[in-house]
Length: 594
Image (cartoon, rainbow, N blue to C red):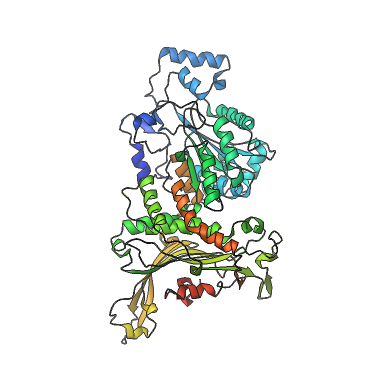
């Protein structure tokens, strides 16, 4: 995959993957090579399960040796009009190229193309990658759904959500037109191998004999994941390139359903073909978390129970379900936010230093953290549900006022929990999670509260409230991305007056470029074969093992959530939960209201 150095600089990890040890070869897709070179160059099995994930290389222009016989064959095919009727493998043999020498292409199929996620996130992210010259030279995008639609209708639908958010003044309309010309549509049933075979035929026409690599994005409900995996694997997979499948959350409702989903997918896919996406892992500040810790000497020695008093992972939205209540009611805030987004951030925050930046090394460390966590106890959890509230003459509806929500629903829209990691680094340190809808503000952040200074010489200046003197590191994931450290310092003047100030890195002030959307980063990683920010099956199992017993107890005992007004700071019980561990929620202080 050719990346423009000016507009789409590759990461150091991706750059390392370019070097394959041969001066005349370059990687066409920035794929991480397999340790076993024999596997990387193996021929595909006839089994539909064995989609080959090979490292694809192409020689520089003019470096491909072509025999005279190879030159004659395609000419005859062109004359007969049969060139594009050949499979990509037959085409390669016809012109005398093996899999390592043929030019590659990537076909991206968005399954569920008519849905909101595809329209609002996936197609705009693909366009942003194209605009930044981050997609391969040869690529095609297909939308696939049950809705009847023409190519032109798809392009019209997609064009309404595309924006030139980067370098807005530079030939936006021209780039948009070029992008839309590469977008096509095929209508079909999700469980129809025949319909996917028709899609396969169309993909081959656009692949034009190049080495085909295929990416399927399943933007569909989880109950049809397996049907699509079966149909696509048997009728739509690449026979001699790689095939990968991106799977959207939710990955089940509990340990049992998640395990069943994993088993079903693995009937047709290998684990390294499944890219389970959690878009929070693609957010800039989450990805920066390991860099902040492991590349700054000032932080790594402090990253333990010896200096850290508590860690807070906070997610809040200032709006309710608003028409999505029917979907949300089947999952609730714990499944929707805590079990995946916040728990993934916690694992990244708390993991030990990985052996390398390799995806498997990082995911191994995350799994160790999840497996070290103590079982969640009901007394360490508070749940809430927002109720109707009138403010400034405006009445905001309660959760059960949503017509799509069953009357009398006990589904929590707010949850707070205290979690503990039972290992030498974090023993006794409370990790407090809080997630809620219809709260007073919208934010996602990580707050690290350090211990009090032993024998603080200036404690009299702070009075009895020593928490005012506590250093705090805040990583604001969204909005207004920032990293800031709260420190104590002297107010200028003749007296000895202390003040608490922020050492602040506000991204909007420091960096002129707009931060890419998380889906852009994750789609690019999937194309490159980088799995670092995707969830492995054992990681998913460990996450569900932690939350499933709690969820089962809440539902079996029909525990009623504490009601809180729409637009408030959440249920009072969350404050008592934090107080049990001598902690104050950092986002509720007077200085944190914005």
